[in-house]
Each structure stands twice: as structure tokens, then as C-alpha cells.
Amino acid sequence: MKKHLWTGFIETVKKEVVPALGCTEPVSVALAASIATTHLKSKPTRVDAFVSPNLMKNGMGVGVPGTGMVGLPIAAAVGALAGDADAGLEVLKNITPTDVESAKLMIDQKQVSVGVAQVSNILYAKATVSDGENEATVIIADGHTNVVAIEVNGESVFIADPKPVQKEQQPGNIFSEATAQDIYDFALNVPVEDIEFIVQAVELNDALSKEGLTGKYGLKIGVTFQRNVERGLLSGGLLTDVLCRTSAASDARMDGAMKPAMSNSGSGNQGIAATMPVLVVAEHVKADRDTLARALMMSHLMAIYIKSYQNKLSALCGATTASMGAVAAMTWLLGGQFKQVSDAICSMIGDITGIICDGAKTSCAMKVSSSASAAVKAALMALDGIRVTGNEGIVADDVDVSIRNMSALANGAMTQTDVQILDIMVHK
Image 1 (cartoon, helix red, strand yellow):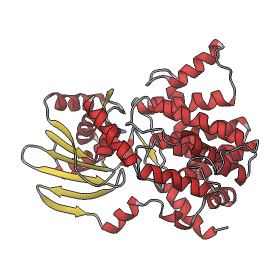
Image 2: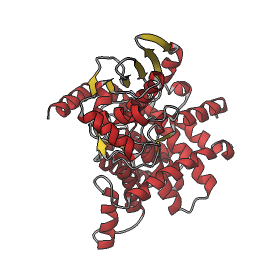
Image 3: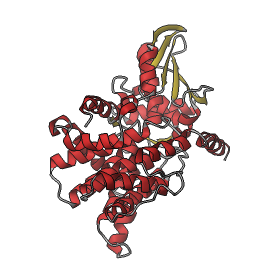
Image 4: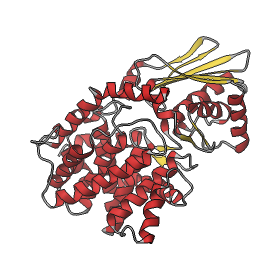
């Protein structure tokens, strides 16, 4: 048992599992604009933003909390006018209707622009704010809150040390000598008081789920499941509850609900996918709080481990890989050991790898629910000794090799898929 990794595991989870209000890509632009305004020291009359192609893809069609609008221009404008520069991914938590109206007016008067930057960074947001006489620019790169440069009137006032930037680019460094078995062993044996903090993921994401079940958000997928149970077209039970409550949280989050999600690896949907199915199964088996904490830690850390092999943003839907973390915890809660956990992850890789990310939007809740459904299926198969074998497709006999095979696909051939997706989106 690699106990020397445990402190790093905890630090990694505390870094990668954090509250986020709204989709993290437009929020990153809002944060850059907000920080820039603090350096301008006056109310901006113009905001110009440039973002990486991947960030543009994920920001074009998603709701921005508290605004009733979608897209990067409103995020940039309201962030510049009223964002809390010290709040990280909750930068928009204090905006008011008056702030939103002022931001909309800036957009109507063509005082806000957003363009694509020709940069190599997968995640990049540059915001310049101006009051007509002075201007300030902030660049965030390689991490949703990772400020790498600040300029005021063309003069540099901050340049990040390249070493922390490199660390942010590779949040999975702690995993260089770790395996899925190590994560499983850690979650089951670490003193529970060291990981009790992870239960906050339930508090935030379940509140989002309940908000989504009001039926006011997005495609109303969670409500649709609930309504059809009441109609008798669907039966209740574990699978339906997982689908209903997980997709409802994503419904609310993707349509701009003013409630934070507990994110995972920079994504609220990934946080929801790693939390809600685990919570539903834990309630189903009547798990106590300590058991719930261990299950959530297994899910979130496994999701981070899997994601650490991939680019921060890619053409591979992040909800699918986060759900692979969830299936580990679900399988364990239902009585499985590491053999069944690894089998379930391999079956999911054989099932839903290749679901594309075509930007953040309300229909992401459908992909979240599909991934949650696949997790329930894979867990039940594994408990019965059934899995996708190492003779099939990209799946290997060993779970860690299977994870690396999937990630090679995401980082390799699917990079061109990403280019094609963005081309389709901007020209339709």
C-alpha cells in the first residue's frame, strides 16, 4: 500500500474538486475580465476577449448564471462590471439584475467582442477592459483560474513563474507512480477524518439536482424521468433514481441556475457525474456518512486519475470519464471488490468511449444521464462477473492500460475531431 502518496492524493482532490458557479469555460472568461477591472480601477466601457478554440466551443451555447443568456459575451461583460475577482470559479455569485442590464447594454452598443486566439494552449482566456483612457489585460491559461499575465496600459505588472504553470498543465503528476488499485486502497483505508471534506460535493450537487427537478431548466431531463414514473411509463428504482437526480443537476447547472456545482477537473458536469450516482446508490444501500465519504473520495479521485491522462479540454465528453470514477464507487457500495471495480471501468471504456464534446449547452445533461446509465449497467455486470474483455476493441485486460488506451484516443485522433466540431459549430 503506497501510503506515501496519500497526502498528495488529498491535496490533488482539494485542488481539483472545488465549487463552481456556472459552466467553467465562460466563468474563466468572466474571471479574467473581473481581475482586469480591478487593475483598471474604474468602470470599463469596453471589453475585448480572445479565447482558445476549445474554450470557444465550450462557451458558445451554455447559460451564464444569473443572466438568462448564453455565451461568452455576456460572461465577459458581467464579469468585468460586477464579478468578484477573489471568488475564483464563483466569480459571478454576487451579480444583480442591474448588473446584468448594464452588461446587456454594453453588448447592444457593441462594446464587447469575443474572438478566437491562435494559441497552442487548450485552455486560454485573455480579457482586456478599457475606460477610454486606460486599459488592463489579464490572461488565464492551462487552468480555469490560473492567471499567467497581467498588463496595465501595455506594461507588464505580473508574469507567472513558469514552474507553477507547468504544474497546472499537469494536475496528474501525483499519479506518475499511482494505479487504480492505489486509489481504491487509499479510499478504503485513509483515516475518514482526512477525507470528510468531500461530502460537501453532495451538499452542493444535490441542491442543484433539487433545483433542476423544479422543471424550470434546460431540457428538463430529470423532470421527464420523474414525470414518466408518475405516469407509469417508467418504473421507479435504482436506475431511474440515478438518471433522474443526476440529469436534473446538470439541467439546472447548464441553464444558468444561481447555485454552485462541486466541480471535478475544472468541470461542473464532471463533478455532478462523479457525485450524484454515488449518492443515490449510497442512499439505496443505507450507507452511513463515513462510507459515503469513502465512496465519494474513490469516485472523485478515480475521475481525476483518469482525466489526468487527457488534455484539459478535448473532443471526448468529460462526463463519460467522470462517470467511470462514479462506477468504481457504485460497484464498491454494492459489494464489489477491486476486481469488480476494475471490470466495471473497463466495461464503460468499451461502452461509451467516443461520445463527443460539442460544446457546453443544455443537452450536456443528456450525455450526463447516458453516462450515469452506463455506469449502473457496468456495475451490475461486474457484480455478476461479466465485463468487456481485453480481446475487444481498445479495452485491455488491465484497467490502467485500458484508461491509457482511451486517453491516447482522446489526445490523438480526436484532436482533429475537435477541429471539425468547432468548424461545424461556428458555420452552422
